[in-house]
Image (cartoon, rainbow, N blue to C red):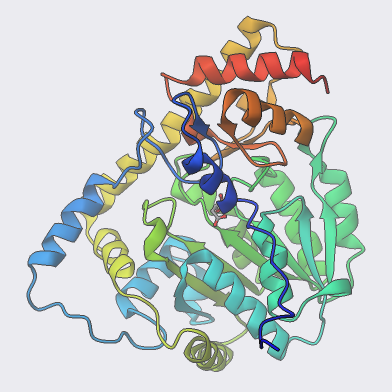
Length: 408
Ligand code: LMR
């Protein structure tokens, strides 16, 4: 009898399997609108020029080596990344109540937060937006929050294709005191629908009054609006009000460092002593999970964030990326309108960030893939960066034909 005989086959990952299927398709018209990664106007991956230059300098610097990083990561990276999330003059940084460790990008940070809370927070209930990034539930389940521990707050309204603010706030009000609430700082994945600043303030009221435990998943700072400060508003606002929270910051998208897994976990606590204790426990979790984090991406980010000229170059890159996404939104919207595609498509321009939640239904998604070789998520999410001036016509026509052939 084999040791492995009883192991069932796991389902493929809903996002990465789209890439696998796209790669296997030999049709020349195929378009990948799946995984959230930036593409240039030519449809190619983009290594930011500022990243290339820093990497070249790193390769030439013979004082650098491949020694282990400390368990909490590269100090200068953790420090400048914390300032980016919380703001340079954040009260949490000034008072020493914030602490942070380097993580394997945002995903690693969310997993570490889940591990930490499972060990130290008595309320074993976590709320996700409905819908949320497919990996959130999976991460929390793996960290011990299975079954009834997982709940949903209303977020996206199918009819209006916009935020269900009343539903969201009602569900947060009714969450048990101390419940963990996973929030997206900006550019909500998969819907591209964010609360505005006034709405965030009301959400903060509830978080504070109900003593909820917010986790801000921040995978797109700089991508939503092109403005790093505006995209960090929800976190910074909560901190300014004295709300204790966690942040999971990724540098995959805004630095194009997808496979370098550069990120940090930030915790805003009640005192410097608490911060020190929390950090010590986070280091123990890191040691048990991955021993210590990788260096390459962290060093690139630290070098850029700590040098005003490089920083400015990076901000310019962010503007190019977010600007291209906005252009593609306008182009797709204009073409769907010009084609007279049934339905309202204003959400294509109203939503922000990398994704549009098209509203296309699973049967329509299947048709788009089978007939037109368009690869998108089964829930109708498309990565706007997969659109280019060369393929947007084709994509708009394919959506048009699909909606006619397979009505809503
Ligand atoms: C996505 O949502 O496509 C990205 O965040 C990539 C991932 O890890 O799922």
